[in-house]
Length: 66
Image (cartoon, rainbow, N blue to C red; front, top):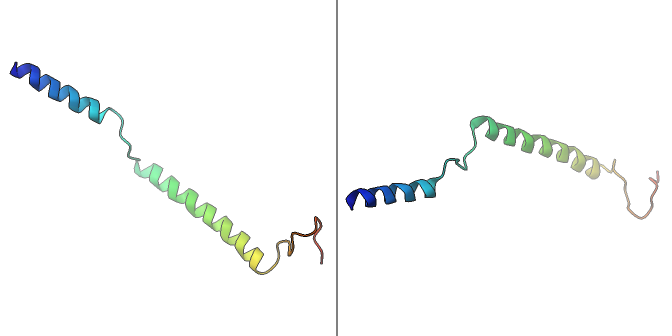
């Protein structure tokens, strides 16, 4: 009886834990941060062009008016 209870508890813990974890390796975390940094750098360039009006100044026309 005791042996069956121990086996049931161990099987339950194994079912809860599983084999794979939800964590990422250090390389995966670094790759994620690199992607975020690259995206932010591109957004900063777009925002700067919009601020200094190098982007299209108005959306009322299909053509860029100068």
